[in-house]
Length: 230
Ligand SMILES: C[S@@+](CC[C@H](N)C(=O)[O-])C[C@H]1O[C@@H](n2cnc3c(N)ncnc32)[C@H](O)[C@@H]1O
Image 1: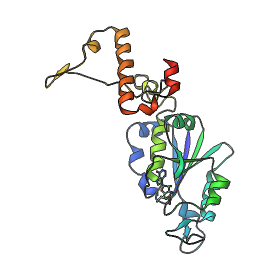
Image 2: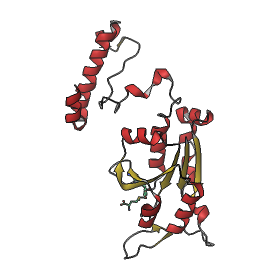
Image 3: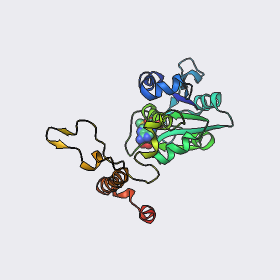
């Protein structure tokens, strides 16, 4: 998969995407990531990318000119252009799965008050928010999207670390609890069933725990759909 990020803060991407599974995906050419500075497309001597909002009000708005040119410099007819914005649809694992199927994502990161609306109307396929809070710019949201999508690209996670049994998977539940050695730590014991070697009982226990945890922490996930599947 190719991912182009358009941002005013390219150096924010140094580090987080050079570690761990994302680094391995990049080294293995499963993820081809390119970060572009929107300011490179400003045409005046001051490299201006923003201006005051028509109608008044606080802050500055990203101008269409540099953003249109930045998007057009990377976009092809196979690209999916995703704008990161608090006014977007709230991001979730199902959207990550959808995005993982595209061969080219263009992630458009805002700052200041956000974008001139014509950018959204003419260039953007999806507007995505990573949650109901406001960050200073779109770099962290873009990194969240890149990380969550990359681990779903076939071949990125090993078999033993498959995404299929994780939270927000096909069953729509949070994941069951994990334990590792020692079997007893400071008086706290690992549930007997996990030491039993009985795979049927273990699978049953895990399903029950996943349901219990979901009911306690995220009852919203147990909609009618889930009830109907049980
Ligand atoms: C200060 S925010 C703009 C907030 C905007 N005035 C509003 O109230 O919706 C600047 C940029 O940060 C990014 N951003 C901030 N919070 C975000 C969120 N929850 N999800 C996605 N992007 C976000 C967007 O790219 C946005 O254009």
